[in-house]
Length: 117
Image 1 (spheres, rainbow, N blue to C red):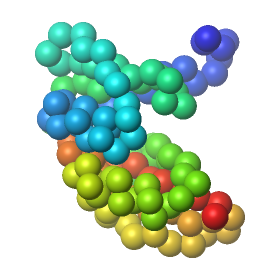
Image 2 (image 1 turned 90 degrees about the horizontal axis):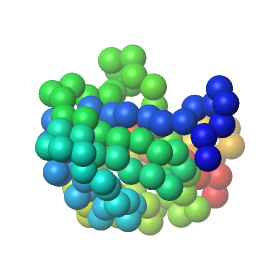
Image 3 (image 1 turned 30 degrees about the vertical axis):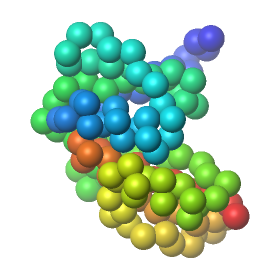
């Protein structure tokens, strides 16, 4: 249920919408609902959101916000991401409170995964 004045939805660009959908399905088990050829959404993945067809990408070096996933097993999650076609752009590193790595999916959007284990 949507909550007043709380983050409710997030949208990402995707130059290859089909490849992005396949990646998130393989890596994380996400399912999508298509709304025409240029938009799809996902739900029940921590936050609801969607992908829209665009030649642009979300990357921290361009000033984009970084979406960070949590994992109980960082190495296992990294392996699933790589097997699904993701590219690790910042190998796992320690920070106060845990470890994390950054990756891109087939459309080039940057995400990170962290673990406190």
